[in-house]
Length: 251
Image (cartoon, helix red, strand yellow):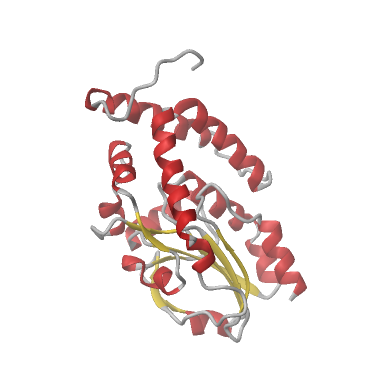
């Protein structure tokens, strides 16, 4: 794509070209059907390189401004922290089964990953990486769940497509993510970009509010105390699965 002239997002005549470019890089980064065992930082560096190559610079700037605005608000710093007691919740998983925090903690420690949805390649990368360590997490006396605002149906599609080895919980209207202090409203200029690239959040989430959680990973002990938190306004930054395993080993 060297030397290619990229469309400007503000030009309505180029919406199809923009969608084509974005879908092209998504297809490239998902082209290997086998499990990727590299550290997340390496996987994500590759995805960022594809974004730089295939996503128009002005579109990248929209996402960068959104992240910068969240950082200016200090959203990650305001999220519930280590040492606090995790708020109780009850949600439905990708199979429509009711799941509660007390039930999960009765079985042992818990790793919770708050994600945005199946449309986000960084969520997908993290979920596949966490799925690869699911058996090690179980050996350490813990379990994993992921929580997102997408509907049960979308959660089912994600679970099935990526063959995940833990439940995906549907957090309608971000009710639980809000309790953890993770929720923000997608800026209007970013909404416009999502709409042009077929990321229809109102449809995927069953909610017209255009709200998402910032990505966050928690490790919770059986009594409900939070042992570890990794929350970041930048959706392209996630903790390494090895770090989660280290926390479980140390506690």
